[in-house]
Amino acid sequence: MSVGIAWLLRQPQLDLALRAGPAGDRVRIDVVQPTELQDPRPWLSGGELVLTTGLALVEQDDCGDYVRRLAEVGVAAIGFGTGLSHARIPGAMLTAADDLGLPVLEVPYTTPFAAVSRAVNTRLAEQEYELVRQAADTQVRITRAALKGGVPSIVRELAVATTTAVAFVDARPDEFVAHPPAAADITRHVAELGKRRTASVTTSSPGRTVIVQPVGHSGVVSGHLVVEAHRALVGVELVLIGHAVSLVALELAKSSKLRDERNTLGSKLFGLLLDGTLQPEESHECLLDAVGNRGRVRVLYVKTPRPTETRAAMNRALEMRQRPFYSLGVDDTFTVLMRGDDTVADVAELLVGMPDGVRAGLSAPHRLDDVCRAVEQARHALAASRAGDQLTEFDAGLGTTLLRSPPVRSMLAFVAASTIKVLAEHDRENGTQLVPSLRSFLEANGQWEASAAALKVHRHTLRGRIRKAEEILGVDLGDARLRAELLLALLVES
Image (cartoon, rainbow, N blue to C red):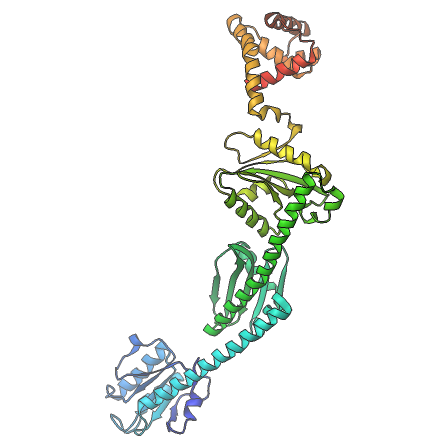
């Protein structure tokens, strides 16, 4: 807010006259500052109407230097009171002011400096009141717009009221609304900062201001409001931006409440599907937003020492990805329905930031009608996980799922103690190669040629070693089940 020189000259009660410098409202006064100091620069910041009677300006040279010093700090104008120290404004002051383009007003003896200050302050107060009144009216319009048209209307009204470019960028990819429509390119500011940024950011440069405000609720950032102006934004405009952010957040909160209700319904349907009450074809449409592109689902089985916090964190993480949270379970374990095209990396990223001690098993992708098997796979994956693993994927194709089960490993270790270790002891004492020969034979499925080639020995040599192993162990390696058990024991032992 500021007062133009032309407005000040039009006030008849002041009887001011322009004696040097430009006229018109292009020159703006922010504040009135009376001073009789010869060099008041340390106490000036620019935009002032400096009032003086010239008490410290004795010589003509003093007047020219005085004007140059004030112009240097960017004062708006000089008001020179005549009839006290000087009968008229010194010529050197007027000449210097014309040269520098600094307006000089003559304040007659009959006009107190206080009257000039009062007039400017009153005008500034009127401007401030007008801005507040306009802001209040604008807040009402924006609120009405929110009730009628939601987020797009809020964006439009804010842009019109502040004469800026405004956009709301949703957390979902490529989802935004902007006004004017040509302002869509300002959404790039969100991408530059990162979509999950939770703090407000303001960047300013000459002739340009950009504000990026996160919008969300319950600690979840659901989008960003972006405002770009080709000037500095004033306080009332910042208030309007804050009001718009609050209204957008309220609009999003409506969606959040709907999401909570949808999650509750989806979780119940998930439970009915698992217990067989609901058939897959009956639940498919209701659970569609949790199903992958190829109609597949995965199940995440979670174990946590802090179930309430973990559930809340999981819900927030999925909400940020615009995903539902369909979950079942009590106490320290629960299952979550995931999309079939979720990769292990996707799920691992989802678990980032979960409370300490959270561990999970992930099933392979399944059709929705096979979700019960997916639940069992997720449980087995968690049971077979190693200490310290946060996420373990079930994958029978790797041939290691059975070996990850602690009870199975314990039993196989017992088998290895009475078989593999006996052969290893014989190898150490006699310099033989029974254990590596047995392993090669078993991994080749009992094929003599393939096994001998892998060991780089003649097949008759291999036959002799296997017969020796059978003799020591008292077994017949022609039994396929025995070969399978010994191979697993070898894998555990190694």
